[in-house]
Length: 345
Image (cartoon, rainbow, N blue to C red; front, side, top):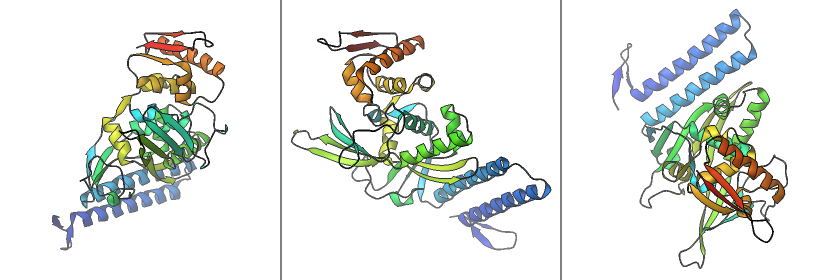
């Protein structure tokens, strides 16, 4: 690493210089805060906002320092409305209010079944609100990092899914942001209670593990794994919080190569059930047919079929008004002939 000569004649490396500058930046920020307190009594919100900005700057400086130190390589991301296709087809983000009882297995996990196998979601219950949070932070991703698992900003186990068996490095997506950034992306206010609810949502995402078993080619067994969605670290202040969010290697791979575009503007105008229906249909062909009872099970609708059909018709009408659907039709009686939905978009 290149070295530079200081004014006092001492030699320091680029990394030493970076650490010295970080220290000066932090000292200067502390001095500014002290000066402000001595001259006037600012509102607590202003003090907290300043602290959150300084902490966010330190998070970004720390990432830069680790990259300079050779712990990983960093590449900029330009995310849009990508969302892992796998997550559009399993009922883990339920269209319901928190607190409603669920049918869990003996391990308190939420089981689900798909055409390719079976799975379970471990961790706290997740709703469409948490899915909004995950989509928002996916839209705010800043960097793609490549390096050894232990060198990631939030260190990983060496046993992580990766695209090639001969690779020792992993790739993750990361961002450092404030809770207010996420609230703004979701279109919500950043009042105290709303921020607390969003932080709780992020913590639930960090505590979630998805287990899935894929049927083997000979259909005689299953091959499975467990994955995390994100890892999170946070600093909480009076009116905000600074977050370091790291998408797991498999989530990063899905967001790069196995994703579905979710129209964010349309989604934000829908009900919780409407969001779940829209998310599932977004991953399907533009002309698509499905039995409504299967659609109900796929999105994890928890109320009766009668309520689902009412919500479904309302959602389809809204999607047609917004121009996302060209046409839709529900055939069948719902008794002897099952209801079947056909859409064109």
